[in-house]
Image (tube, rainbow, N blue to C red; front, top):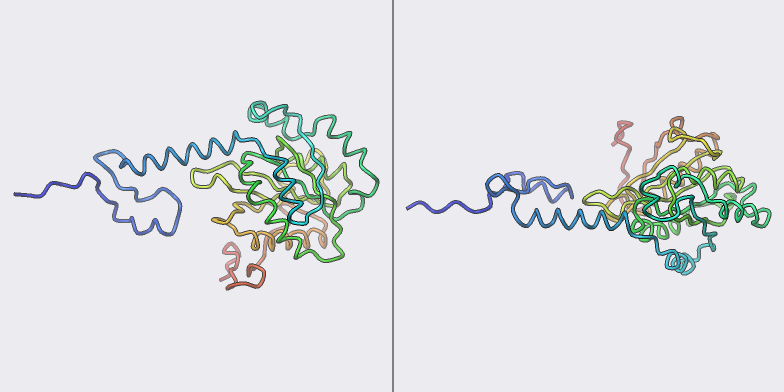
Length: 270
């Protein structure tokens, strides 16, 4: 008598799953996914949706920044009135609303003028990413900045998109802007934050003028390594007075002196 076939047929590549969060080698039941991977997919999809729709807890973020010894930020808002309008009208998330522009203009002289860096934190498409990663990254970056780097007090923007950093940097008169923003959630990364850096920020710039460091989170690019990359790009921007397609990431990051060095594979380094 032959033994019955198992309900779930395992995938021979299953051992590769230990190296990635990607949904590979899930096995099958007939022509369908097994129950456990299907339920895990539905959970991940719900987490990604929650990350997009959840509003940023600004008071908690300000409290976390204060506890970390970071400067008190100025809280602003984009032209998108609420989360629904933000998701339906990306253009409104790229500009400040009128009260926010007036608030920046009314700041005491010298808050940003003549500063090397304006730091902007925006909720983006994942407030979870900002809540979990913005403060640790800024703390790690603060340890790397030399005394000759003049940093403007940070700005927090609700319902903001990437380009809103250009307007803020221009209004503050900063030489460059560093924008931290929640990235569009993936099905295995609802907490991924991006860092965008732009030299000579001004309204109307395109993505070609920016450098991006993506997937900043404990399960992706760790905070110390991300801070080292940000510091490298900031240094090069100040030296070359440019950003975007004209400036490549040629870092060999050692996680601030910890662990083996890892080269940029695009440059053929080991």
